[in-house]
Image (cartoon, rainbow, N blue to C red; front, side):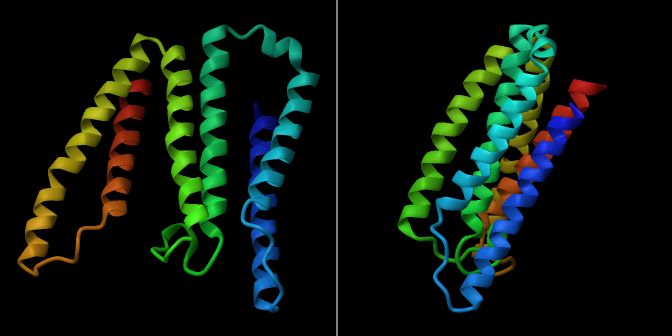
Length: 191
C-alpha cells in the first residue's frame, strides 16, 4: 500500500509542477496551457503508474474480496475527482481553491458535472462495499454533519441581517460540515 500512496503523492507533485509551469507561462506573457490539459495528463500518468503497480502485484489484489475492491475503487475514484477539481480551480486568477473569483463558464460546467456525476458513481461504489458497522458510522456522521449545518446557518443569517456578522459563506459552512462529518465518522469507525 506504501507504493500506492507514493504514486498518489508523485501524481500530486506532478500536478503542482504543471500548475507552476503554467503560472510561469502566464507571468512571462505567454498563453496558458489549456485548462483541461493538466488534469488529463496528470490523471493519465497516475492511472498508468497505478495500473503498472497493480499488474505487477496482481496476485495480491486477486486475494481481496469483492467488497474490499469496491471500497478501494470508490476511494481512488473520489481522490481522482478531488484532484481534478483542485487542478481546475487553480486555473485563472485568485487564490486557487479558496478563491471566490469568477470562473469561466466551461470550467464551471465541467466542475459541476464532475461533482454530480462523480459523486453519484463514487457513492454507488461505496454503498455497495460497506458493512453494517461502517454504514452505522456513516449515518451517525451524516447526522452530525447535518446538525453542524442547521445550527450555525440560520444564526449566521439572522446576525448578518442585523449587520452583526459578515454575509453567510456557503463554503465555510460546507467546510464545517465536512470536518464534523469526518471527525464523527472516524470516531465511530475506529473506536
